[in-house]
Image (cartoon, rainbow over all chains, first blue to last red; front, side, top):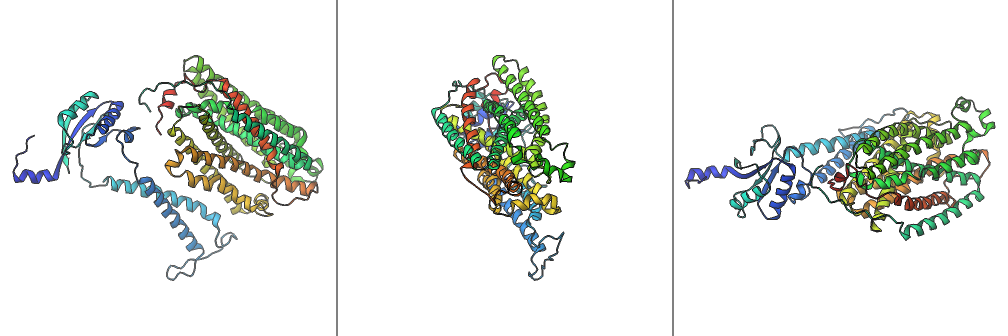
Length: 195
Length: 407
């Protein structure tokens, strides 16, 4: 794919990107090729698999996601929401504008903390779950209207793909093909997509 | 979970480390002294602590048996790496049975007010429960419970070991069935046992979730004890195949079911607090007054708040030191939980019907006697029983999955 060095092509190149993709059919192949490629310094962009493959993160030497910490923060936020909601509506009547309405229910005191527990729990879980999933969708650009970056056939079906970044300096096509072949590649392709 | 084929490591033949022997003997000496002192001090105090210890160790055996049964019939993989330790736990069942039988023969009048005919005569409510609350029935049921538990655990152990000799997976499939049967029987027996042994200490009080509460307590306690044994065995140079992924699973078990304990605790407390019926609130009124309130909150802190917060980060669940510490806290917490169920009831009974002058919590050597005595005996038994079968179930169909385990 020799690109003619004219102005129009350069402009186009800034918007599109290529990936050098090896397609595999077995789980153990993708695990071993990912590990090998990472260890020998290939510019691994990503792996695409039809289902979460155990140990792939380790093979790619990826760091742990920051999402658990985000979840924890959302949980704390949910708990805070539950506490402020209930304490406010059940107890506080001195906040101007948003006046609470202290009321005696079943002869219980104004601050009946055991009665608050289910709501503490529910709102904590609700906020943790929903906000984590939503922020994951946003972070991974999985919302309606998001443009597809790359399309590789079969990776949501029965094929495992590893993508290398051909624009990186450490990329060498012959070596990459050799690497893929050693791990039993089915198909090698160059995929073009949005940058 | 697939993955690469892993070489099955050689499992060293188990020999009890000297440190286990020393610890066990030290615990038993202190425990025996405490037990004797307890009975010399006051018979109600002695029997209360014997009851706590008996229920506690029944719980460890049953918690291990339940995990064995459930992991069997859900086709679990990772637990094969530690299943021999669970099997060894279940062999301890005859000891708590002897303890419960001793209570049934000699200790009833110090523990259960319904066992005293004069009280029964003047109490219409208790007379209505006579079908359940009588000494003969209590004793027969103890034997039935232990009979069932010992039979099913014997079968599970037998098939598990038969698999070692013969690689035919039919033995593992037998255990799927035995595990399912055990689980159903266990659900019924553990509920009735909880009512007989603990709930009937306050025979006017009732809680429909009590059986589940006992079950989850024993599950967490067994999971924690399992972790402590694994760590100790690894320190002695065994179980080389257990890695941090296995720790992670054990930690998750402890974390999840510790939280489930809190869920059940709240479910029981919340409903009783809400409906505010005198027959039900009596249980908590005793435990929120007379100096019991501190233990009431300590119980929650030990069994849920601290373990939950400590085990929340992933790395803590993968760190043997942290899960070991939490497991230690939880086995203390379960004892405290039982103490808080038994002692307020029996001391109240002793104060009212035997004229003993006792108010609020008491802690002394007497309280730690029976539990340490049985604890020492447990370590000693485990030291012996772990050597009965190879520590790694070599022919188990799930062995590769267990060794090749990713969390």
